[in-house]
Image (cartoon, rainbow, N blue to C red; front, side, top):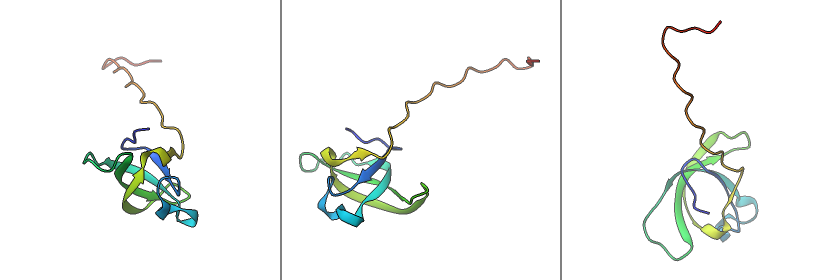
Length: 91
């Protein structure tokens, strides 16, 4: 898994011991830091989400990539709808 901005990830004890137990969080990724780190680890910046999906805090976390999982599968990008001709109206 390579996190991307916009992904909503579960950050828990599998990703880092500091998030074990009731310290688990949902993170909507805004930045994936490209600086080199220890093998298998990554810095992520994003917004912590509450149970309704609202951002409640901004955090930067250092986590193991192998321990990350999607909170929900990311949706594939949809192609843009074709532009409609100006002046033509469907009836």
